Image 1 (cartoon, chains in turn purple, yellow):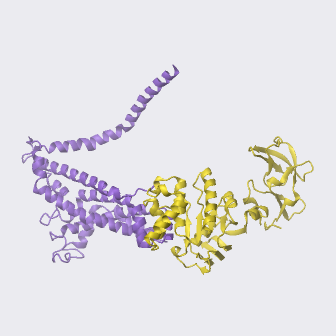
Image 2 (cartoon, chains in turn red, purple; image 1 turned 30 degrees about the horizontal axis):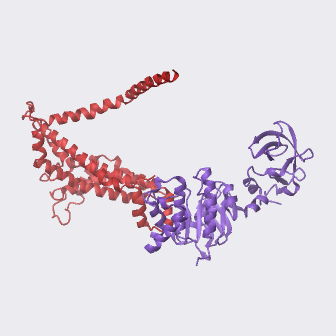
Image 3 (cartoon, chains in turn orange, cyan; image 1 turned 30 degrees about the vertical axis):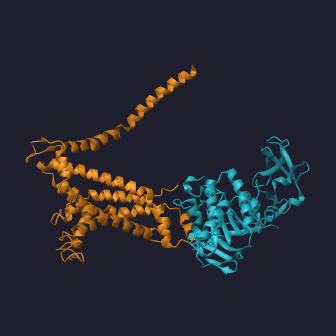
Length: 300
Length: 334
């Protein structure tokens, strides 16, 4: 009898608990629905229509537009330029961030000054970073007005073969602070005793870095790769400010092409490109996790 | 042929800015000896150990391992192994790789490496775990991996920095005995740091008691217990610690009596009042407030003894042969 009573009490307690839990997650559900799920659903739907030049006459075309756009040259070119941007910015950002973090990860008087300087680009806006590089490598006003050796004498941003590299420089520089801070945090989480044990075990500085330090910060590096790739796929401002997609459309990334399709007649196409970019980002990130996760060591 | 592995501190001092962590340390650890550096936190014992390992530089004085002065020798070339309090295993490597790592960096031929790995794993009962990662092991198993990593390089000197403090009480007692066995089997010099007097008394050939960066006394467990060199050692060694009070007969002296050398007697020379009694099964501890003593005195009584009630007046007699005397100013034994 008593047992039955207890069971009833605990059941109604569970329902109450579930309702309370729902009340607690309701705000984030609403925000997620309003700002993520609903717009995304609208984006997908928008891709099912074609517009006339004034944007008024929505015409249902089903998945035909998806097929046309995602198999078309524009998407392919945009994807290729986005990938170039990823290839230029991510490995360089990763390596430079790690080098700076290793250099600044010591107990020296005044090291905080360097740590602050190295991380300062986090607080720099993309616009400022782009203007800095405009002043550095622009053909007319740049400190360096030449080209990349081996790619002709045209200024870096004027040459279709090197413009993407020029734009990447600005992004690398701007992301350096973030890479530095994240890698430094990873390095500082390595117990000092492990480093000391490695010293006693006879690991020299280089061997110690590759055999002990690098594996121990691998979770942090995986995170950084994922974040930097997503940043690179989403980059817009440095391209707009430094090259506006040129010269000869050589820096038109997927995001830039989406931006160009804001005219009423091209909204449907832009929506399809956006969904395509989402798919690419999703697949690339998933791929990174599947490929790299096996090589990442999560410590005990 | 094993090299002679004595460790000799001669006037060794370590300063961090204005703070002196180790002050003019002279200590001789004999070849094959199990030496325990004992003292409270911040007494400089770990710093002394880390100086032997080469992880701390020496500000003044000289440190020798065998007949070689090692002040300027890098850690890997000192022929020592260190077991850390946290074990400091490499979390991304298997147990086998962890144990082998000192050999991998010293160009030991593969065949010999495998033999030595197998030997160390067998000695510490780690054979079933060689392919696991440290994260999959219990605290006690990790501790044994750390020991195996130290054993495998066959160092001249074993250094251990509070290696048992992360284990539970039962495992600690068991591992203590295993370490004594390990020392006997290897016959190598052990320098072991702890703040736990039970560890020190049960394992050490000799104990070096330190406080405030200074060496207070070096001796066997019996020596530091029976004839403490000063008031610090008298108070630090023994649970409960030695009872002290100003000598009523000599203003410049302090007397000390261990709890087990006191008895209740109407003719006793120390008058007091019972404060509390603690019955522990195998014995009872009586807390007695003694006139003139800075703290309560502790009296150890056999468990069959019926302790007097709190508040009762009481007189305590000390075994005259077991009364210690210290100088009231210097604290040194007189």
